[in-house]
Length: 158
Image (tube, rainbow, N blue to C red; front, side, top):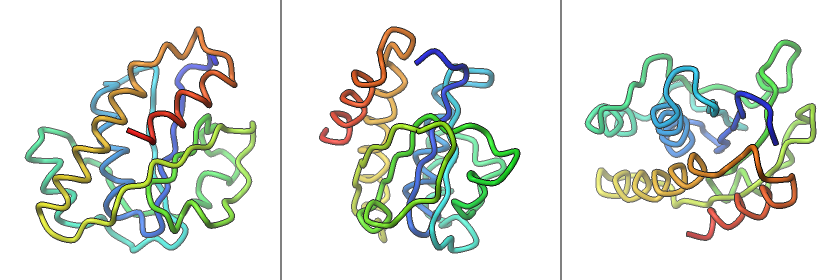
């Protein structure tokens, strides 16, 4: 998989917390112009990011500029960025029929419990951060499709 940047779409039903945390964290770690680029969306977006998610990201020094709750349909529309990996971060989204994304993106499930309290947000963030760090460390250029699929599946088990 040598496409640059490697675009990752994090999906959650409401696109207000877990997927927002994963998107912002991966973009932070990858940096501007990095080899990875993250996006997030939801099947039934809530309309705005959860304030606890935004506060946690701010406390971690991660930018939330441009963070918004959006529909996954945006990424199957003409002109959308090509998606190389779709990661569901909630069980409900994992069970839903996703829209068609051109290019046969890889798919993985990294389930994280829905956070409601500040402590639950911290726990969800810590789990997602570990997983995103591992994804960011993968040698994408040297892995074939099957190897990469295996690696991203394994990440969801940690």
